[in-house]
Length: 198
Image (cartoon, rainbow, N blue to C red; front, side):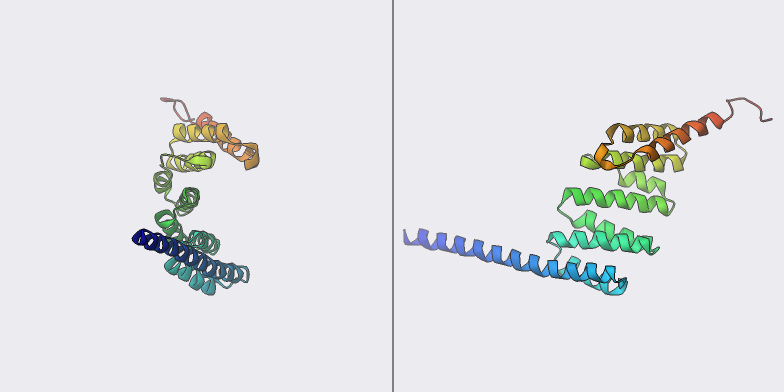
């Protein structure tokens, strides 16, 4: 009986210690994250990057690490540093335990891949088993990638999928429809097979 009581006390004590540790680390990461976002707002990129590195290296097990990496990725792409942005996004993909954040990071990474002229890499990034609530956005970016690759049938299918899965709370989908219409115009503008140019 005494041994059982001791074991129970050790378990309870260990659990409380773990809870306190998690809360302490979360509070510390939160403070660093607030400082980082403040630095970004003040356009102090180097300071923000330093704080972000501290969060991702020392508090990688907290939700703030992935959020910090996503924020820095956005900052880097806005400042024409796609390689640094992709580095941050890949960190989220490899380390975050939040599947929605991973899907978001992959979506943004695909857009950066498109921006640097690598549409096939964008398609590869977006090849996932479960797109969750990002299915329409994934399809839209896949359409952009296939269009750049010159694969009009796949681009048309992707844009059609995006339109079908788009919901009202995602905003205006007219741009996707315009891109789909543009593909049709491109196909119609091509001469028929065997036709001689005038």
